[in-house]
Length: 146
Image 1 (cartoon, rainbow, N blue to C red):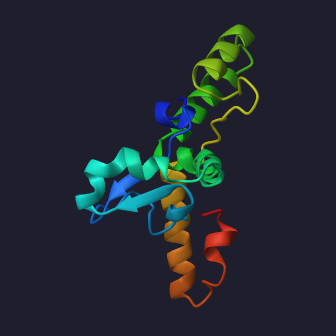
Image 2 (spheres, helix red, strand yellow):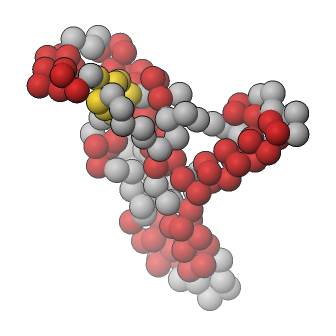
């Protein structure tokens, strides 16, 4: 499972108001996305051109840290373990699986699949909520990497 293609091309999110994205209330949405009023959507190219390069680079870097949270990459990691953990595993097949699904990087700064995906994020959110209900919620977001 490679990152979503727009992420590989350095994209970040641009969303109109009144649309809630997954994990928007958990992840630092403003670090990798911009929100626009619906009436501003026709001016999107102009608005994007006005964003300073330094801000774009920060947003691209932030997107690189969270992209996997929007996938189900733990399934890919589990498949790799299933195919490659046995004593009869063929190293060539394992290498092919790792390259195909982004479990090993390519290029200068490759995104790698870690399994910290939507399922992992949901589990961390639920754990943080449980701790908060029990009065132990201070720092739960930081503790769980959200």
